[in-house]
Length: 268
Image (cartoon, rainbow, N blue to C red; front, side, top):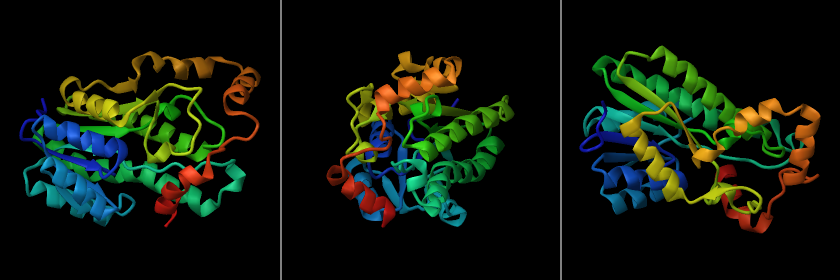
């Protein structure tokens, strides 16, 4: 069983939003937290706030990821890895460039593949460890205007489920966390009035809780868990009508002014 008190925990994309909230929750429970982020200054600011550590991390680069984990291992074996880094681009699929589609997949899916591939061997050899892969309710329910984001989160959920089965009996656990829309920069400028929403600290606490209970999948809030089954059970034509009601005829719309800072950061 993995314990938090004194354990070395790594959080990717930990400078802001869900990652930052997770770092705070893990540190409050006694973990030695390492924050990896492409924005080193923001990561260092969060690390200083919690008495943790920060290091540069590009999750799409295996060498960068390996260097991050090696730096964290100086504090002790990495027992917890939270694969949280991710981006979301919004617009109809054909209005977004192909290179951007590939980059979104490289961060959202490739980052998880890199993290698990590099952290799991040591965990399995020690017979303990815990990985949290942060997906989204988009892993259960598709949203027009965020097609590649949805695809990436479906992939994270499926990858986690398959690897979890392979790790059965090793002492190493993998939890997939699937929150509803969270009020972070990633959702800035998006109209969230017709869906359940969360604050980052709610998700951070739920992620920290998984170290104790190690459930396979955690949907936040829990009552949304059946929605994937509901979507699969509704005939396609009826499903399109439902989505048109909630998304409208212009998918991927957002307030460009409010979303500008986020887009400048992820595209810069």
